[in-house]
Image (cartoon, rainbow, N blue to C red; front, side, top):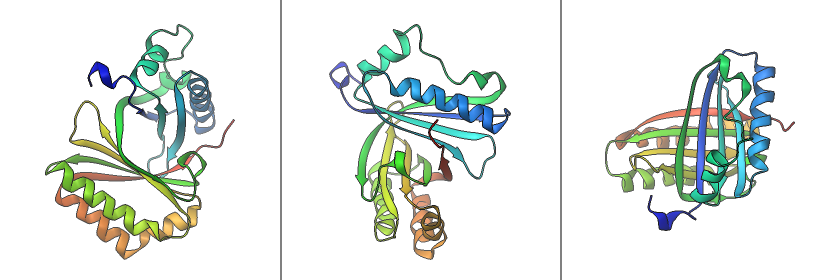
Length: 206
C-alpha cells in the first residue's frame, strides 16, 4: 500500500482461539473492542463467536485509513494489545484488508443476529472469484432477513479474501445456508479458490 493510500478505508480482522472460559474471554474481548471503538479514525466493528468452532472468535473493525490505525497501534501507550485472556489463547492472528464490494440492505453487520465469513485463497483469476462471490450474494438478496455483504481483499496478498454475509435473524440465516441454491453458489467458489465457510454469532454489547 503506497503512502497516497494512507486515507483508504481499511478493515482489521483479528482471530482468536482460546481455552479460557467463554464468559470471561468474551467480556475481555468486548472490553478490547470498546476501547478501539473510542479511538479517532474508528468507523465500525463486529465482534463474534464462531458457532461451529468452540473457543474461536473473530473481531473486525473498520478504520478511516492506515494513518489513523497506525496511531492507535503504535503511538498510544495505553492501547491494549488484545484481550488479557490472550495468556490462555492458543492462536491469535491479524490481517489488514480493503473492501472491494460492500452492500447494506436490511441492517449493518454490527446489528446482525448471525454472520457468515467465507475465507478464500484464490487459485484462479481474482476477478472471476469476485464475480462468483457476487453471485452468492445475489442469491441471498431475495432472502428475508438478509442484511448485506462485504468482500474484503488482503492488503498483503491480493489472492486472499474474507467475505462477510450477515442476517438480522438467526433462523433466516440458517434457512438461507441450508437452501440448495445457496449451496450451489457456495460450491462454485471452489472453481477459483480454496474456501472455508464460518458461521458466527455476534457478541452482545457490554
